[in-house]
Amino acid sequence: MTIPKKKSRNRNHLSREVWVQAATRTIAQEGVQAVAVEPLAVALGVTKGSFYWHFANRDDLIHAALEAWEQDQSLDVVARYSAIPDPRRRLRVLLFAAFEDLENGLFFAALSVSSGDPRVQPFLVRAAERRLALGVAAFQDLGLDLAEARERALLAYAAYAGYFQLLRTTPGAVTSVTDLSGYVRRLAEALVPAKAPRL
Amino acid sequence: MTIPKKKSRNRNHLSREVWVQAATRTIAQEGVQAVAVEPLAVALGVTKGSFYWHFANRDDLIHAALEAWEQDQSLDVVARYSAIPDPRRRLRVLLFAAFEDLENGLFFAALSVSSGDPRVQPFLVRAAERRLALGVAAFQDLGLDLAEARERALLAYAAYAGYFQLLRTTPGAVTSVTDLSGYVRRLAEALVPAKAPRL
DNA sequence: GGAACTCCATACGCAGCAGTATGGGTTTGA
DNA sequence: TCAAACCCATACTGCTGCGTATGGAGTTCC
Image (tube, rainbow over all chains, first blue to last red; front, side, top):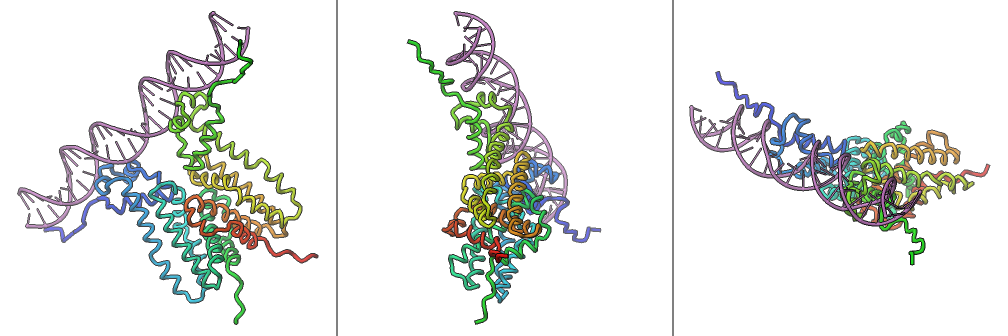
């Protein structure tokens, strides 16, 4: 009576991905520098022996976590929003979507916390380039010239980064504004010029 | 031939303040967690023996540096800006002054980096409360109701925090906007409602 | 000119965490 | 069933940084 192709693969073996997920949670909560091998091992109920079988070293784990985030990021953003034809509507959807993704926003804020880390820097730089380029293009599609589009994109990105920084560091200050969508709507109204007269 | 009342006080003795200044520089550059006693001692050309004579422990130094910053902060802000009679002009001056103080802005961004530190949290919370209260009051003076004043104050503060966060983490992204005053002017125009008709 | 005080160097103990070495238990495949 | 591959535990070394203990040089005060 052979067990029918249980193929259970393993009993309670940890996969590389489990470590990456745990590291991601740690980064979101306490920053990159808090990713320590031994405490993570204790939290996962194993020892360092497991870790150093899956990863070359600590940097390897951190890099894997950051790359996983970057993949999630740049995956479908362009595809999803470039499909919206009306540039005004596209810009508003972009803004609201960015502010409503709490998890991603807080992880970004946590990454900014570790901006000094040479492992983190390139990811932050690429994220900034990607997002600002997206914003600049969106504002240009509205008919603004490059300089003005850059100014507004930077303002929008700063408002985004600052919002999640405040939400992370001093949540009490943010929740005094009860209506997030009102906040974003004001930002959108401030940045998106009044509808051009039909010409 | 006695040396005439040299009263030089001491040859090259370090004062407590010297340590605080060094810690402040370190915080501005690398965050609170980078304030380590032994490296600081090496940088100052002394040993830990000096440090532990002036301070009880590491926390003592960090607390002293943070308090020095807070003092500088809340010193004359209210006195300086509440003197401006016109609320519209007062608000604009406030905004420009905040963005032009690079040193303070970057130190604030560096502090936000260490927001997880229980020593830093209270200082960040107090700073947020103080600044937001100032902003809310300024917008209320413009005739806005409380909810709207809060929304705009939060937007302004987020734009401030985000700007310096980006300046710290990805300076290249910010300098693509060459004109800071243009950025601030846009923010001011977006937030300060058009001049009310004289009634 | 000696005692007390100030400021700092030296030398230690201790804890946390990175990384390595090695062996053992379990699963898989032939 | 036996060997190989897989996955992890144990036990080390090494480094960094906190905090303490103690002594000693320079200064001040009497």
